[in-house]
Amino acid sequence: MFNSGSTPPLLHWSDVSIDRSLNLASKHRPFLLLLYHLLSLPTLKFTPSTRSHPIPLFTEPTMVARPNKPSALSATPGPQRQAAVNISHGNQRVAATLPTGESVEILLYGATVVSWKDAAGEEKLWLSEKAALDGSKAVRGGIPLVFPVCYAPYNLLYLFHSYSVSRQVTPVANSCDKQVFGPPPPNHATSSLPQHGFARTSNWEFLGKSTSESEAEGGNADLSVKLDFGLSSAGLDAETRKKWGYDFNLIYSVTLGKKSLTTSLVVTNDDERSFELQVLMHTYFRIKDITQVSITGLQDAEYLDKVDNLKAKKETSSAVKIEGETDRVYTPSGTVAIQEGGKTSFTVTRDNLADVVLWNPWVEKAQGMGDYAPKDGYKNMVCVEAGSVRGWQTLEKGDAFEGSQTITLE
Image (cartoon, rainbow, N blue to C red; front, side):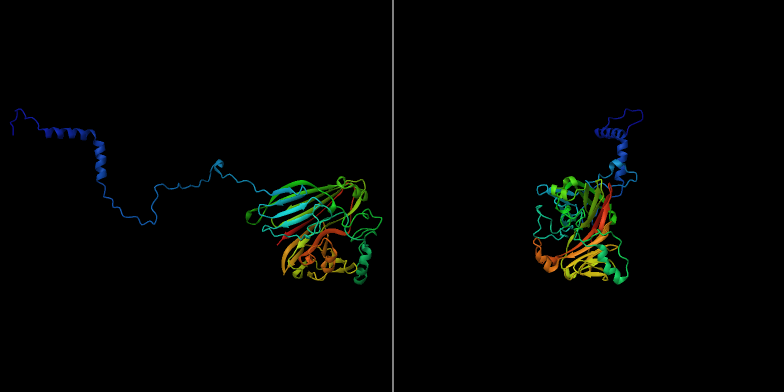
């Protein structure tokens, strides 16, 4: 203790340290207050995680949907699907393949379709093993194109006479030179042409391709490719030109779709004179067993039966069976279908082609054709041919005729 007014004693070193500490505390007061509050928080208790996987140090950012997202941020569409078109065999064959696998092949000789396959690669057309594919003769099989004449000469008035008398039907009003089953009378313009005309034995020009998309089920788009071929009077050889001296132009289009094939012919008369014509798309369909095949859509249709002395008849069956040599010209009103084992394999829809030829050579005729192989091939093919052969189409100067068929796989 010391008396008031006396000199205070010197401070101990520890008192100096306390004083300096107080000065530091005053200087760093904000920091110390924060530290105090942190130390005053309740003690955290950590327990082991029950997650099956550890929480990652970094996580992917979550995308937030924005209704007014700028167009610049929209997804860039991929490349458009394209059909592959190839020209091969010395520029004598054109082939097209869709992205889904369907394919078609056409020879420039005759513009003959020689192959049509579905997406699984299964062939849908019958082609003889001995078919000439080198341009030496017409192709046996596929889809030969018949123009401007079809079969052998028979007068339609005569053909319908027996049918009319027995059923009290008025004969069809055609002039005497209206023929079916082709070469016409000696005075007809096509009389010197070979059977089935010259289109299937002429060299055509490939004009190009075009593709299109159509709306399909589920909102998807089906791609198709169209191949165009041309033949004009200027492209005929001298001998054929001498036999048929008209100026004309043909555009033949083959369109391959996902489950369909369309063939279309446009005939234009570029001559000063009119001429008459017949058209037939001679389709050979590949089937598994002819005994299991029936043709529907022919019931009540009139037809000419070449095997039965060209008698005019009317179809009574709803499902026509092939049980022997068959060569008939029907005039059905609607779609014709090929069934195998009771299930539809193909449907044939026609536009401006009123007639349907039904043909199968059967045993004897198959044996007699040198380019028909194998000889029992009649068991695996049937021809259902869309055309205009029951009479003639007259084409005036500058006019055009167009006909087409669409074959659909079921």
